[in-house]
Image (cartoon, rainbow, N blue to C red; front, top):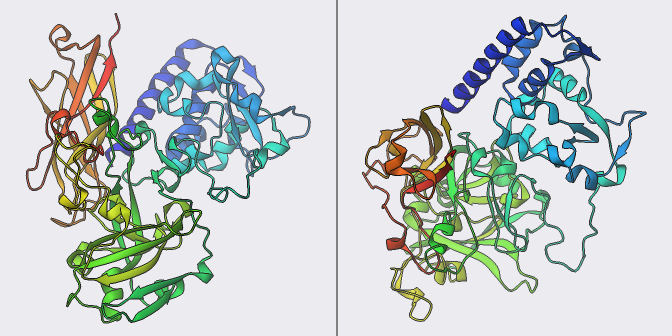
Length: 549
């Protein structure tokens, strides 16, 4: 995959320069087990890059780096004789100006200031951990979890984390309906606390599959606490009869089915519409989108087993088990019955997310995963399914998540006049861009709903006067035509344009546009597609790069 290969290439290229420097520096003074001048880069390389490459490098230098070869290292455990450091103190150390850049791992505190500038993955990602835990990064890049990496990490140890800080710092108010919400990754950019809404930093959306703890979170109500052994799914037939399935039934009575599917909030990139004219809706940048490999029972198999057909059924309604404090408001949505009952649409009652039980924030124990359809219909914590001739009467189906033209505002809107959003339009976003010499290097994602794959992404750095075609990397290259449910990552390298003609407010602006398999193309401007809820924001995406004076 392009992201992995490119990252490895960067690491190897960096290491080549590093070893050339060693051969001429003559620096052989030591502190402990490490060679000054060479240790910083090795530590950064091993902690943050590919384990195989780092292991190879360490194996070639065992006599020089004996500490990296020790076995049975248990990082983060209490170390006798080290000072105790509070989490509050760690959080104060986010830059060199703060007296150093500190991070935590389990019960350990580490000073990473020495090698931060040589971090092979770039400073931006590792600085997201400054003053906080490494665990989210090691979850994202699982190759860190090797003994030689643990050994290297412990060389950076400066103290033990204060024991009381290992537990929840704040006492939760038991009357708060959000008191039982799960812990979340500190890497997520929080857009709302109650209900919780958050998106990952764009620069971390660089892998075909999004790790569970970095998957964007869009909740409408408190997260319900559900025990799998007690879970029951109620299915209401068209004639009013009911059936019931347990979690074990869904796991064992139906053939497991896997699908790689992207889920995107209708409000993704809402901030761009909001900058034109105020919209009603929570703030989202371009990170309200993520991709996972889902496993579950095909909804079509379940409905078929229960004898539910399309006869008299136009819609399949989902009701979640999430409720407000009065237990009167329940999240609900529906999808057309022909989507629900078509095996090729691969609608799931999913119980696994990236080969693990679905986390609480994402719908444990069962989530409806409707590939190619807006996130609002991918109902979490599904407790009830209704086969009906009508759409769900939920607020979120009838009076939200609908698109209108730019002349409609709150004084003249009629929500009944527009259909509920189902399939999403083609979209792209630039997740990172940088200037390297006389080139601009950019990468991002592209996606289209309804199973339409991405056939091209164009990137420009001169306001569309010229375009480069990006290299594409689908999340699942085996998905068939009109059944491409995962996003496509892309990367592009452009020659630096004549800046006098293209600089805008002192910045070089990189823009992307995507084309899907039906040749749908993103619109150029956001102002022409503005709508009062700020949904379906899919114009060309741009990222500004500040030019050196």
